[in-house]
Amino acid sequence: ILQLYQPLNDFGSYYKTIQKNLVDMEKMLDLMHEPLEIEDPSTAKPLEMEKGEIEFKNVSFAYDERIPILKNVSFRVPSGHTVAIVGPSGGGKSTILRLLLRFYDIQEGRILIDGIDVRDVKQYDLRSKIGVVPQDTVLFNNSIKYNVSYSKPDATDEEVAAAAVAAQIHEKILGFPDGYETKVGERGLRLSGGEKQRVAIARTLLKNPQIVLLDEATSALDTSTERHIQKSLQQMTANRTTLIIAHRLSTIVHADQILVIKQGKIVEQGSHDELMQTENGVYFRLWNKQLKDRLKIKSKIKRISRT
Ligand code: ATP
Image (cartoon, rainbow, N blue to C red; front, side, top):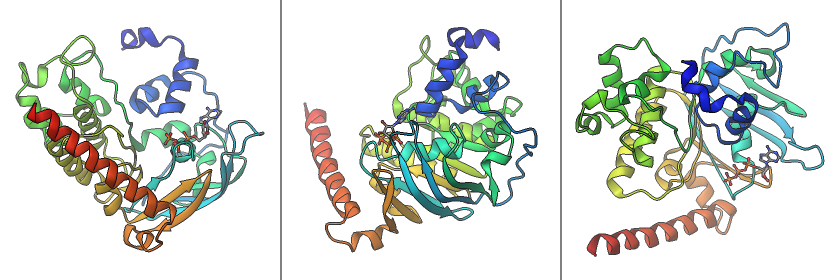
């Protein structure tokens, strides 16, 4: 296993990358036996996650105390619900996910999972019990089977295939030259962004966490990939508490609740229909802009496929 991490021998800088991009939580978990930046208190308890309810209570946070990032942010994600976070770049969306995983400690307020402060539980527990699907999944130079089953190495072939079916990637894998044994990654078959994200979704399905954090990819997808992604997301988020940094209109519309974050504050909050009623509100404008961009992309794709 160590060999896998040879290029990552600088744990400190790798930890920083993870903090930043939420990449590869599973790799992170293996590395967590190294000293941590934030230490567990001696009284840290195991995390007994029952319902997987998330609550931010008056949370204020700054990476550098001179520059406040989150300002008095409060919201609740009831068990099994999906909450989408949207808003302009730099507003603090990813920071919210990082704080839930306790990559940083907050200055004010509380972050609770099932009523327990994340500072009071073992970090390893916290991170092993929350599923994370990052924007960009880095694959290991190994078989696709190894990559899918990474979150549950003892999974049977049937379990791996079932997760891949639910993640809408099984058929694709069967079409690879050596099926599940096909080598992927830098030195093997290269997968597209959408395929990599579905591998991450399959991993998460195998891990079966009660809470899922998802940083949706921003890149434009063709209609059939989009459909596959949507289906696999539905499988993953059903009955799980889900917090999504959302970019896709289809995801946003289906969320139970949407938080609009701007300059570190929740400026609007509600369902898609509720938020659309505030004409010229932040959400209303964001949505219309995305709609326009999407139409532009669609006609671009059409033009390219014609040539
Ligand atoms: P985007 O949509 O572009 O990903 P975001 O809404 O997710 O943006 P965050 O990544 O949460 O925004 O960043 C919020 C602010 O915090 C930004 O101004 C960013 O520059 C700053 N920031 C993020 N990470 C750090 C860090 N490690 N140290 C200092 N400032 C940071």
